Length: 286
Image 1: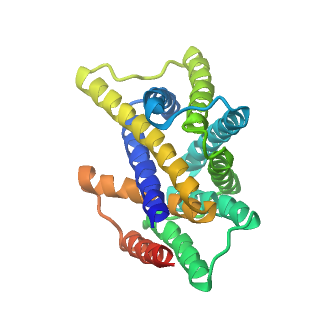
Image 2: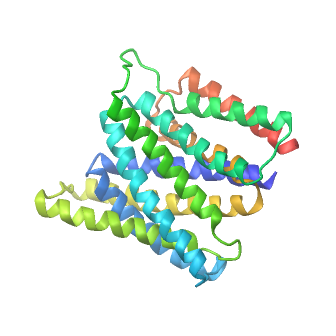
């Protein structure tokens, strides 16, 4: 039961981070938002070290570095795939792949389930597609580059989850601290290079500037918090279950979009939410 709650919390908080990142990206280019949010998240994680601990174990540091590299690749491919679109297809594709990759590793390394457990996992994957799908009248098929980038983004996200799960259970926050440090560092260098070539359009109006910083800080805080939730979830249960639950991260985004932007939740998305809750209930009572 604890694993289910932590897995759901991971998905929701990742979705919250995506929402605020999207809001901030309306004011400035996404790579700048991600770099600044990463730095904010790193500060938060360092502040949490006295609570959760930190290990100088080379294995923990190594897995954290690898997860940071995977994160940089995933974000780059994700932004590129969403830019090519359509988002309604590319986004759920990335989410499903991000669940399948670590789930396959978990099953290959010993995760086993009853028939009901397999059914619940299959229903969760369907729920991921429904929650992430944004219906529209002008839905078009994605191009081959968009599909490949979407799949690469999912593989990258899955790589992050696999590396975090592989870190020693007694390593505290070491894996996520290294993840955030490496990812923020890479994106920060890329941002500096971008600014030299073409200055980022930071909003000049005080009100808009304040909103940008608030949204970016929120994105960084939620993203790092989600990493901590995932670390805790993977240490209490199976990688397969946690990774599939984590792929429901669009749920957090649509909830905040409904609350703050009054966006309508589509029937397909609502069906996905109900399906995800039902499937999670099956896993919880197993």
